[in-house]
Image 1 (tube, rainbow, N blue to C red):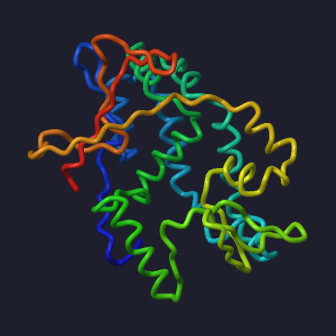
Image 2: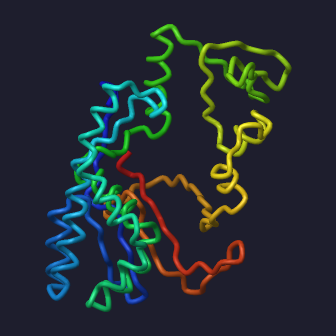
Length: 277
């Protein structure tokens, strides 16, 4: 973290309310969450212990992010040995969906609430909760602007240059090597290394004209898995909500009447409060 960042670590990951007003809370502290679950559903002790053990196990995983795999040296690969204990964890939980896991519960309330709450594969859910448990995924006070401002200034201090409002149209390639970029205004800029921060489709099919595809990559785009559409509405109001606990993923409420978006029925609405910022 940058010295100038003030990081807020949430107590709650999410709060889900049912039609009767009963709330289900996922706490960021795994010990607290485990005790909360055991108090409500002691008959599901085995499932609860397995779940929280997974979160604790993943919290010890330090993902290597210094460089991409294709730039690893021999010694970088040796360091990856420390990741071996987590391979079995990822293999085990990577095969379990959130809905499948929900069916393991004996408690009917938890079976339903986990079914409504866990929309992702379990390995992703466990890793997200693990980051919260280890306090390595906090919210930077000031939001995205505060987050990137330090990164931008650090880059400039190191001698870097940033060109704003300069849309890239093509990646220049010579002898199958990226050597620069062409902007929408026609100007070209050469470089030793070209890194695209655009989405995959734009990079592969537009900037590189679809010339560097294999069957695996083409399959990602020919047969994509649909993801539920998201609509965000942000409101600024002249008051605080000190009585409402902040959450990472929001507070979910049932709608009086379901709505249909992009052909899919939606029965819930999530709200996030940022009064703490």
